[in-house]
Length: 532
Image 1 (cartoon, one colour):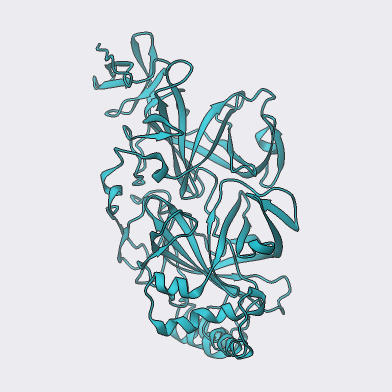
Image 2 (cartoon, rainbow, N blue to C red; image 1 turned 45 degrees about the horizontal axis):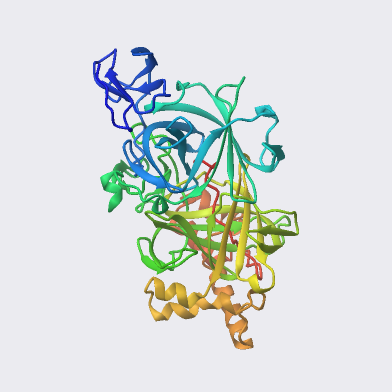
């Protein structure tokens, strides 16, 4: 046995299973997972005892790793442990962060993944006790720890693997519920029911990796992530998964949507999709935009989504809009939205607005509700940090800032297990074109929607008439979201849904639908709960 007087190492001993060194950097820690044989070890005084074995970690190419260090709110920390969870939509990590300060000389925190971003949270007591897991549902209002909370997600979860030093023994492969709660102060709370008799309660807030001044990150994440090789299960084409958090990837050859959320070693789930329109901004393009940051950042287009509204009345006109998923390695993900209200950007937020419809408040700004509608993804390209499912429907609501804040946007999106809020602002089409260095010939096409009277950019009657002709032409080309017309049904049954004959029939036969004047989406697509 050997000891180290460094404040970052409180105890080191040999693994009782394989003999490899196992470190306990905090004197208060009693559990660790051997990095060599993955034995789960309990520390009893100066003796180590093996109590089980952890499964192998799913390689999700996260930029974080054990030993990485940084500063949070002026205090230094080191990542000493990792918990990896799996739920229906994929996996996520929670990193055990050990701080140099605390009531006992050191304190623990948790750096967790949150919709393509991060949350720093700390365990806290819950004096009044936790509500029963079965009683929770998204959108529910609760009062816990003296504060009002909105339930954002309730998901069945399994802890599938552990690594490094931990403050409690990992309960592996047993299903339990994790619920995420949010409030108007951008705070997030987690109820972890892994121990049903004593649920864990943690409180935290959003953080960007760039704010943490981290060192010791995985080398590949410092520059460009090394691609993971995947073979398309539909056509056999070689796919390259480049983003750390990718859960779905689209084959560039056959356009099949491939689910990589459960790993890439076994049979991959996938589904075919019909052809949509080519994005105005090509995948891989890099544009310098501010998007809420204090300075311009280079954003890369990594995904493209076409979506449509599902009207309650089948005779109502149908709305289509497009979303570009942008990525920056330290700032995370944002969406660039091309709707009939013009261009805007939006990013998921940790908190929730206060007050109630039709006017809500977020960060001191009042927003008025414009629309409530159902949306569905019709076509995708690229990589995405959430699991894409065929024909998944979301319930959406769009909000616009009041008065001098009319350029600000909010969106609420709900699935069966989760509610996601996104916030952003309107963008001028010329700013988007210049940022991505698009040809000037595309400027007129991109600005057409800005001419709508309800968007606040109305310029002239000529622009409105031109937009009308543009709408008619686009309606003939857009991918159809509703059921097929009877004129094309025979071609579909003869040649198949993805055939050129059937697609040409849809385009030439008039697929129906239209555009909602002043509508579209202000929000990003749902990704999963607060740590996913």
